[in-house]
Length: 124
Image (cartoon, rainbow, N blue to C red; front, side, top):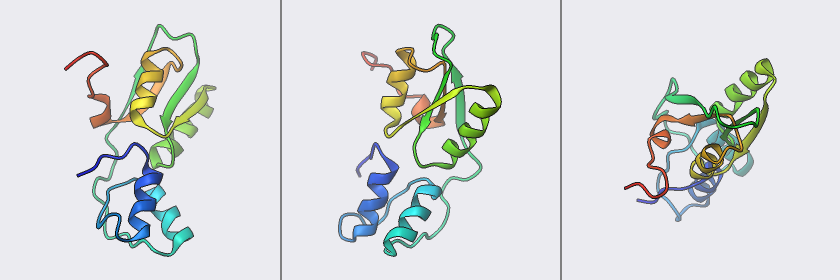
């Protein structure tokens, strides 16, 4: 089993054939790669209805919302950031997004629930 940082990476590996037999990635990413490459078949949704959390770092002076790239969460985060007048920044890796968020580069983060439970650096 391999855990990818980027939904684009896993989607491209699935579309190449031979690199992976199966992969789980956001539907938005899978759809775009399927259209562009004509190589991917989307079999079924795996996790639908969301499972994301929006967290706030009150010590951050940056009025930004961090989120992942190429996902439906990004689309929803964009709508929220416009409504709240926040700058939106996207990251290819959820770990990179968490590091930026905890480091104060964004006041808010929209993140998939399991990633939000990752231990901070130095914790086991």
